[in-house]
Each structure stands twice: as C-alpha cells, then as structure tokens.
Length: 89
Image (tube, rainbow, N blue to C red; front, side):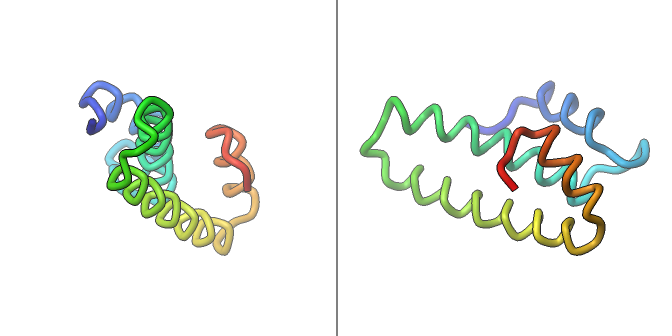
C-alpha cells in the first residue's frame, strides 16, 4: 500500500521549498502523514493486522521526531505545516 507516484508528485509540488526540493523535512512529514492516513484506514477494516499496527507506530514516531526538528528551527514554519496537514502539534 505504498503511495502512488501521482500522489507523491502532488505532495512534492505543494510542500517543497524550492523547485528541486525532494527531501526537506516538510516534504518528508507530508509523505509520512499521507502514509499514516492510509494505514489508519487500513487498520479500521483489519483490526488484527499487528504488523501494520507496528509499522503505523514507527511512522508516527518518525513524524514526531521530524516535527520536533522543524519546531526547533522555526516556530512559524512548524505551526504553518501542522495547520496545513491537520495534525495535532
């Protein structure tokens, strides 16, 4: 259940800092959020899929660390990003 290439391009175009940006923290958080949303809907239908649950928890932890890194750099960028993604900060 990986992200589709079209969806990745949409996320890249909307969250990248400059035209050649493919791996900044903001882009990574956006990709992780999309993947977390997909896994959450999967787990609603398959509640006993424990390997996917573990993967979800790992992704949430990784996103949390990246958000802490962004917050450490710039509070305004952090607040704008969590508002755009609809993530609790």
